[in-house]
Length: 133
Length: 305
Image (tube, each protein chain N blue to C red):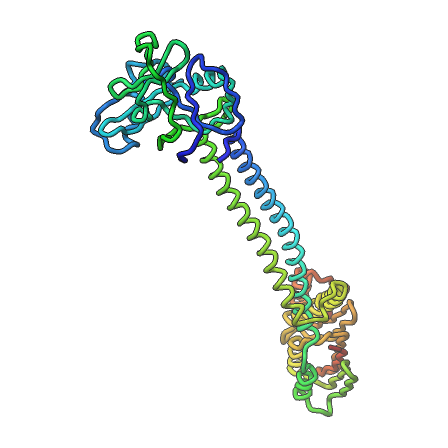
């Protein structure tokens, strides 16, 4: 083995350079990974949110669920007008119990309520609902 | 240790040497103190522990000395020498310490020294009672034939020449280097772990994008998110309003009129009882809704979602 002057110091300096370089590597990895992690975390949360919102407000088989509104009151009291993904429905001469059931039903279907108009005449109600999905 | 090293016997007053190759040196008794002891110890590490005390009455300032121990048949040989003295000697002889590999001691070669070895004009080194000793040439017969040190008989054990310019001992350098290297390896492993963890998150995002390829573009995602967030907020407000109102309605409180359109709403509630009307007003206000009109039996609520 070569006997170099300051051999011990050289070994020490080399190991210090090694440890410093690896610390810089760790630090840079940490910084870049944190940045990337933050960015990816944001992207991940955004994606999850988009997917969840899409599932809530653009659900499948919504027409079928809306059809159940027809069973709450007799058909002669309903005026049903469905065009594509839009519905206008009018319930006439319904009592408070029926009104309550209709409202509960609407609240539990993921439709986008555009308008609700309820009027009372002689203890009977008229309700108009405009919605889309 | 190899057996074909070039050995140079160094002694006080030696002629200048000019060598470029690497070599080892042999110290004469001029530069070391020797004690030969028969001790009940078997292992070398045990002898190293007591080496300092062996020289208790022989040397002062023990810190200046380095020690060397080896076993010669049944006896232990303890040698004390000063590194600084060796360095000075090398300098006097014009030998660069950086060219010196190892230090040997003449005592290690006694078995191969059959004749005295000349150490300048006045002194010689001879083996007396098995110990390499410095003797004046004047006491030796005039026809004494001196021999050179035998390069073929390089002893097994040696000590490294620690350069005077070295600030760190070899042991310290090795310990620190190992420590630093362990830390370095840990830092590298941690760095790799950080890189992998961010990669795992990227993979999760990629998985979702593979399921919904239409969401690949961030602009599209933001547009969809903005659209659905607005819808979500509006629809939740509308449903919340209906739930709040339904809590106000009972057998004595009837709904006369209710409409909600875009972000506006209006409700008219009726009750025959004035006290109930006041209660409803309180409840409405506690629900952060605004009563816009109140008459003898009707209460109107208007507001924005």
